[in-house]
Amino acid sequence: MEHQVRQYMKQTTGDEGMDPGDTVGIIGGFGGMGRLFSAVFERAGYKVLCSGRKTPVSNADIALTCDIVIVSVPIHDTVRVIEEISPLLSEEQLLCDLTSIKTAPVEAMLKSKAQVIGLHPMFGPSVPTIFGQTIAASPVRCDEKIRDMLYQIFTNEGAKICQMEPKEHDKIMSIVQGLVHFTTLSVAETIKNTGIPLETILPVMSPVYRIELGLVGRILGQDPSLYADILLLNPETAGVIEKMSDSVASLKSIVASKDLDKFAEFFTENSNAFRSYIPQATEETDLMINTLVKMK
Image (tube, rainbow, N blue to C red; front, side, top):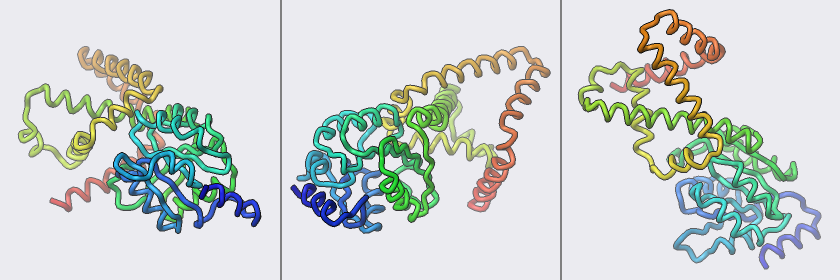
């Protein structure tokens, strides 16, 4: 009823799009990411309503009363929740998700009548603000004014929007997340299997190697279910991992043969592929190294 009243007011006043008088509903709003985005919308002047496992507000309440509905639940639950609320939504509402995978959630959201923008925050819920962070966005069915309004909420907080199609997103994330997480976990498993304790390894590592190993430790300190979902549920990841396996086999063969020419060829081919990125990579990692040195 509350949603219907607001829609009637918009129709009679000629108001289009959404404004800070509207309500944002976050399903899973008491999780880490939900809390972060609740604060973002509250600072923008929106009323925020959240549902969770132990709240009196249900997912249906969110769908029936809120102008912007955001699904912020674990990846493996996202499609189920979207399918649960979709029949309750109207074309005047905006439906978003906050998952690391876009193809399946977006397909599920498009079965509703709502306007649809898939969102993927490229950061974890532990960040203090979204300033300097990137949000990938897939506005697959949305009025431009509403899309721009949503983007402005995020850019006003200092975030950057990177717009892409859902399938393109999943292909890119199969590298940015899938491949990187797979190789990082493989490094951890390999070090563990050598039997050499970290207490012996760490003292002899220079800052650049400590940064690389630090990324291993950082991932291993997180919730394993999140990384399982990212690796197992992105439909593009398996193919990238297969390419990784082929690359490892090729390099392993070169190392076993002790062929310096083949190694130089392998190295040079990859150096050429990364040529445009090397100056930026060097500058950024130099900054990390210098920061780490100063911390000692």
